[in-house]
Length: 333
Ligand SMILES: Nc1ncnc2c1ncn2[C@@H]1O[C@H](COP(=O)(O)OP(=O)(O)OP(=O)(O)O)[C@@H](O)[C@H]1O
Image 1: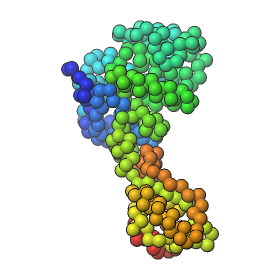
Image 2 (image 1 turned 90 degrees about the horizontal axis):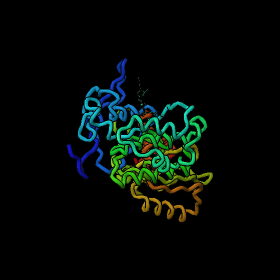
Image 3 (image 1 turned 180 degrees about the vertical axis):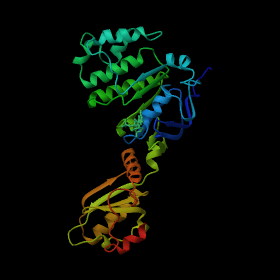
């Protein structure tokens, strides 16, 4: 099947994975990734990211639903899919007694149409480490070697499972640049990551998984826009939350406390901040530890993790503002 630009290279429909013993790690998820797109799967520990990626790589047969990679079933039509994909696993597990160059050469021997090893090592910044034994590499260098091996076959689709874990800030940025360059040349990239900054910076679209289901998906901007912004502050001693003006008319959609810190959640950040500061100025109050923050992917992620943790309070952290001392704030929620 010829897949030209604009068509979906990865298609996942109502996908399920059940491990022996009956644990359902992936519970009916659907998404698609277009050619030349970077798609990130985010999620808390155990959310089902690796379980999903392994199904896309054809390592197991789904318990339900459908996966197509480059138009083929990666499990049933492995021979059609495997040569066109590159896989970077969480743990490469190479023989540590070989050098970097020997490892790449050995891997190239198992890869049809492999690119020259030196070219790939150059790409990931390991060329000068070619004669170093794998066991002498740093954790970050090993991740780069994992990436080099995934790139040997010049893949159309690249699966990256936590590609920058163990890299320092500079190494991480270099990897992002490389992944972006590959995307710009038409490579389709599906990555899992624990770094929200990585997803925000790199991904064209993303899905946040939680307990085997997609809790949020879209472009980073779309996922972020669905969440309220946050204002937090401390009132001066002797003042109570009940002294605040009515919150709902200021655009506040939720509130809470964390120790002495009050948090307001709003979808109209400028209006709420302006009215809060105007009130404080009129009252002659200094709002200490004032922090005004637009919704971010990190907030979205933490909200999902918290909601999932069974905490039912208004968006954000901590407890709802004490109802006994905050009669007027009740109107906000
Ligand atoms: N072989 C297995 N047998 C049984 N359960 C498994 C197996 N592999 C994973 N699981 C369980 O499936 C769930 C999802 O695991 P998975 O590794 O896909 O999560 P993840 O999102 O990749 O997590 P992490 O961020 O910690 O890598 C977890 O509860 C895990 O314990």
